[in-house]
Length: 431
Image (cartoon, rainbow, N blue to C red; front, side):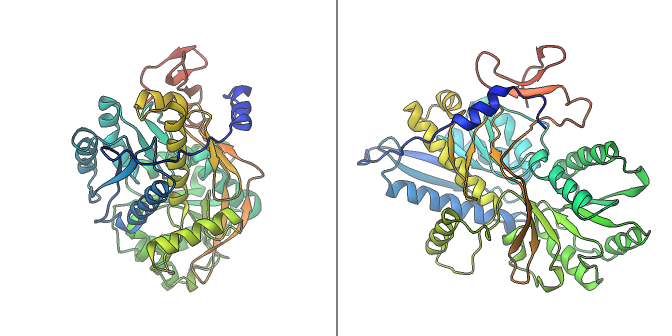
């Protein structure tokens, strides 16, 4: 599947080992500050607030283990308020004013694109925990969410091969992630023989609330005698009225299944899920995964948050993985210096919450399993399909002509984010 990758990558993932965590007394005169850059207000707060909470838990737990390099970790929380330019201002504040060692944050690709120049200019570290559209690789960013080949492509394959879907609605929020992901999916579907007239693409603004006309259009598109599915890249609180309208219009999963890339347990917590049973989501983790490491995490989460009704979800797991990778890379380097951490983190492997290990690869993406889950009446997911092993995140799509020959490898001597294997040249900055 990963024809652009060398065999060394597979060896790297297989050979990576974990490193012991530091213990010992804190150096009282100094702390290591960790930035948390998530929207706590605005349209994305429905998804991002819980990521702030899990970061606070991880920092607390690490301090209970003895901190990092003998120092206590200190969380610095800011609220960029679902305002993409404000993300850049808050990122600069975290790095220049608060002197954080690393930042964990962003959800939308618009927010990530906003902060990217800041992290590159100031040579700081961003751990980005959410699925994204690919077509980017930065030396200063670690992409712990899914690339398209770790979520979108496998979801389409499942619908095509297991559900017999022939007609496709690509419905998304109007910004970079849905548009680029759908561009990749449109090319992929057509490469699989899907006719252009069997692909319907629709975009709506953030916070969109009036779904009657769009859902009616989806029903009409699905009435042509071919099995139809909706591939949803709708983000934020617009999902609540979208799913409510699906229920109101009687769009049932057995007729027109919806597979979502940005709807997990947290988003479903505010919905009456009974009409949504059987609709799907593609992630790399679900709360319902029944393995000891996940049970331990769920228990720790509910104890920390002091609310048995609070759920876990995939981007939370990505923060768990990213945070633990950062901790181990810092221990390995013996410093929080960004250049040292960038060098030391490649090959670091830590437990994921589905019972395996995830490894940081040379392209600053991680290995992940891919899972398809069916919505249940209790707002949880029943896993109906999963990959047989871990998938390496592919930052540059094989299905776009400008990307198919590109790879990223941030190890010396290459240190390139968009190396063209056809020309043998690096295109400069990978971002």
